[in-house]
Length: 242
Image (cartoon, rainbow, N blue to C red; front, side, top):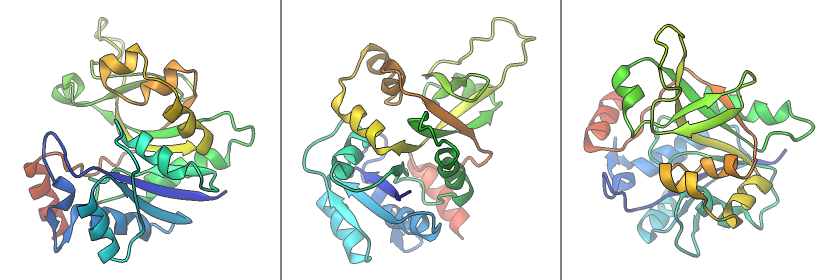
């Protein structure tokens, strides 16, 4: 299989503008993420795909591969789909640009999903982390996922799912980590299919796949990683880097 990584990178961000260009131990966050993804050795190619001339030039300056988006996009999946439409690839993994501590172990697990799917029944795979903190479970900024007995996603929500009506049910809560591995056709289908009401309501892009009948295999990982969404997250990342 020809497997590539794509790192979608927007310059503007509502909670932390220009976060991908913030300094992390002498290099911008997006460069650190690109280099960490490349260093895993898992991919035939690694690209940043961006709408920003600033990010484009920065990746080029550091010898990386970068693609400029041709049009405006609502989400990272759309940005990646446009970039890979004419590429000869089998699997594309979406690595978040604000995660400079990219984890090889978790990415390997996603790739293995497709190596053990000869019938091509799985359209995409993604990561989930078991969470127990009540504040995180109820936080709408934390996307939760519920799965069936074979770990296929049933639904994603910003609400606590399942609802704990029976406190003795001992259910597990899982946080969805926004790292995806797609078959090429699945992400192209996403790009050309319109948003439906559930995705529009929750503002969670992977719900579109479920609404159109795609199968999402969830892979459990115990590595939370560091997502840089706020200036406080950046300071935490700087301390970890040291």
